[in-house]
Image 1 (cartoon, rainbow, N blue to C red):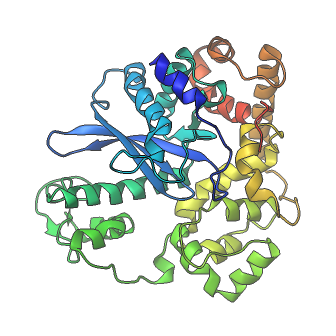
Image 2 (image 1 turned 60 degrees about the horizontal axis):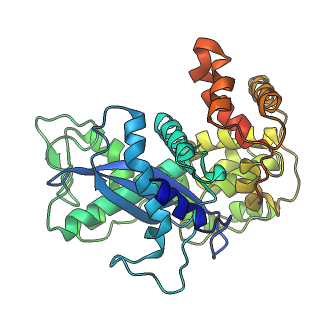
Length: 390
């Protein structure tokens, strides 16, 4: 595996893609319930929704996070040494040069730590030995891309959706089940389950049925769909966007981080303004993003930090920096992170990233509660200057 790490380290690392998007990738381990069953490492570039997969391997059934990391890391390295710059036939794509991510992340905190340890042990470049915990938007995009990928995979194989027709598509119980009237593939135990699952199922219903999904009322659109396809039609949203120096999309797959941060930074992150840009259902996706991004804005990550490098492009044209004052709870959280930053710097010095042993020493200093401090540690570290260029 050290040879793969050496090859990986030679691939250029760039902050942005050729189209100017942040070079951040989100990965997850996904199970393919075909015959024989197996697991894939599923990689998504959230800003563009570009997807790449490596595998299959048996990963989910492995006994520990460390053993899973042994299986996952070679696939991650392979993906960026050759995979993302080649076509389905394995041949290089014209004009596409391999690059490694500027940053990457996953939604599995335990696996992330195991992958970090493995990357460090085999000598992967220091900047990429940090695996961020993916935010809710990236996780949602990954889920949507996986649903489409699995649907297309089973369709090309001439097989029915392996997860449909056996148990309720939402609560996963058996018994008396009724088909979705549109695709006639997915089944549900009740009208309540079908209604609750429609937000997710509608994304693949058309491909399962071989037709198009009928349009839905804008009030039923999730925040992502509303922002990309409807907000530009609302005069009040247009005026708000203008005050934020924000251009509303007229379709496509733009993410929500930029509008969320613009609202927070300018102190305009009211419920009414979120509804104008992202619709009545904004909380389901953007609610947690608002909390995460507001904490980041209040922290004001240092230039040279991974967080600053990741978010700088979203904030460049923001008219004013005037977020609303922190609440008592937010002040306590910011103070906790600041204290962690001071502790990290006292252990390793300014401008440096802790190595494996230093990280262990920092966390174990908190005794039996060290696991509870892991999230604070990661947030604090990501906001410290480590010489990362924006």
